[in-house]
Image 1: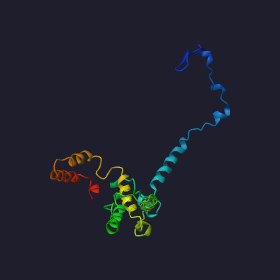
Image 2 (image 1 turned 30 degrees about the vertical axis):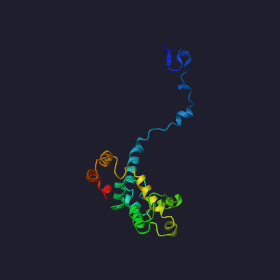
Image 3 (image 1 turned 90 degrees about the vertical axis):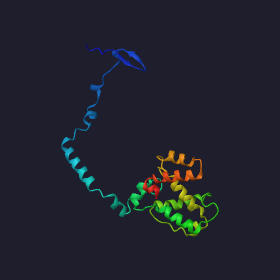
Image 4 (image 1 turned 30 degrees about the horizontal axis):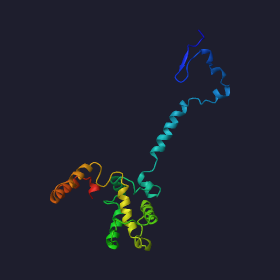
Length: 199
């Protein structure tokens, strides 16, 4: 009766029970004593503490006011970003396009790339919820970095400006036979964009 049946291990195969040694009785007392005991009495207190802690957490708005929580600008969903910032159009695009319309009517403003360090500097300032002074010499002399920042913003949107959902419709619209038909179809699809994307 004490003999264990043959055990089977997939990688080893069958082996006799005399090769198996139970270690229950050989575990030192110090190890078994160190196993934590159930904390049923403290359970209620812990739950109460956690509830109180969660209720007393400051709101997202308060954290923003204290400067603890920063809203992401780049790589954030467009609708979510506008909801959190309270703007109709992202500030980064508004600032950059106004600057480009005033100072950037040069050849290839959106085609040529700016200096990477200037683009990153601008990105960091917008991500820190600051509106950088684009009229600084560093940006006036490298005006393409402002155009590059706009392209970077659009490129990092999780859902593109024209949205994944409408991709096929836009594709069909630009494939229309005539310019007039193409214009009508594109206009139709643009009307279907979510409000933040449409704006």
